[in-house]
Image (tube, rainbow, N blue to C red; front, top):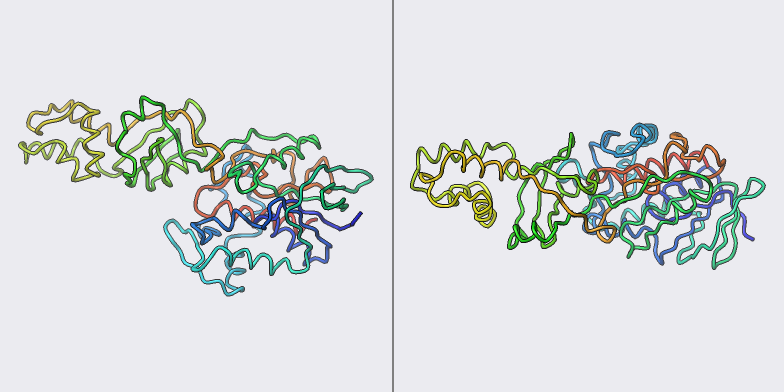
Length: 390
């Protein structure tokens, strides 16, 4: 049986960061990865350019049943620390909307950076784990490559989102094995879907995109929205999906910042012969304007439209209430909301307080970031915190 100081299960963003930091402290580290290659999610992220962090990351950009848990790790390893690491490796990058940072080149540059930082760490890929056990203060991991033992075990296996990348419930299974609670996982940052009746209403709108404000309760996001053959997608929808639960209705303002009723009322006074549809199409995409006029039963010329019908049309634009019937699920979800209950973990070290030597980091934990590099920042921060402790 091969022995190490630390075994990290999962060679993604959090796992490689943890392994690198632990190795720098003189620890003998083994990383075990189920997939044939390391860091598969990094490789496909950001359209292949890796949205590796966000300039504006704060603890307020994260969801959790224990919302203050992430504060410690994020404050001790910030986006500026990772940016410094990126610059130190000579990786060119650029900023896009909302503080999102991407590589100028390929996401492979971030993977190469992490592997360079983890130089000296033993990494084994295409490893299938059959069991994990603890005895006499040591952890044993049984695999098809043999058995390995260590004093510390860090679980960095993520959640079940994007199963084609090798995602699974493994981390949750290990947590439950050792008596830790798991907050119910669900897909996050995922397109929302409609029932047949609502799909019929939006038939022909697939591909239409515009900036919109999407609201659920006290939470709202103003970003691009995209109509699809299944429902709605785009950044604003992906953002709100992490908060959405079955049965929730969302409110969509398809023209934020514009009082559509007021605009149409004014147009009625100044251009009464103008078709209502034409007036609306000056504000939003033509196909969408055509459909909304039908929904509001407000066709014909503006002169023929009552104020009530124009208000109804304005509400369809500024306050469209719609109830999704589901999401596209883990198949397309960028992250998993929920995970290992943070109440069972130390916010400083990520160690399970009831199981010394057992750590959980990254997406496996019940901390989920908004769209735009925030989840990678959590991976760097939680992995760094763990690597400083194991």
